[in-house]
Amino acid sequence: MSGLSKRERQEAILGLIKEHRVSSQDDLRSLLHDRGIDVTQATVSRDLKDLRLVKVPAADGPAHYALPEEWENAPPLEQLLPTLMTHAEGSGNLLVVRTLTGGAQAVASAIDWEEWPEVLGTIAGDDTILIVLRDPAGLKPVTERLETIRQG
Image (cartoon, rainbow, N blue to C red):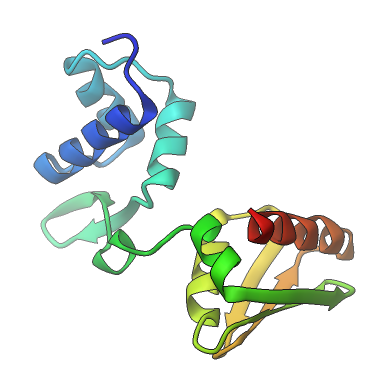
């Protein structure tokens, strides 16, 4: 199936996840191959992240990929920041991001989901997020990345 778009490939992945208990990226690649879709492991890995699929434990067998209900309709960072983020400033390895009232939880979850290597973790209140960076050198690139996404 050459010429398959990213959207079509990801729709196929979602269909397979709903139809089968997929416990590994290799299993998913094999199922895709059976449908005539040949992809690399790196592509499968990126697609799993883009689709927000996670491995969940199963009571009756091995862990498998699933799309958690609470994430199914959660918008990505690119949709949240332009409407919710007001500004960010930091010092050392701490970055404070301000959002509109009630926006911090959603934005912090989206930042966590990105798994940026500079970010150790986030703590969110109602309109404030504390981002703890692994190293003070990450302050400028993370602040700039957030601002770039916010500005669209």
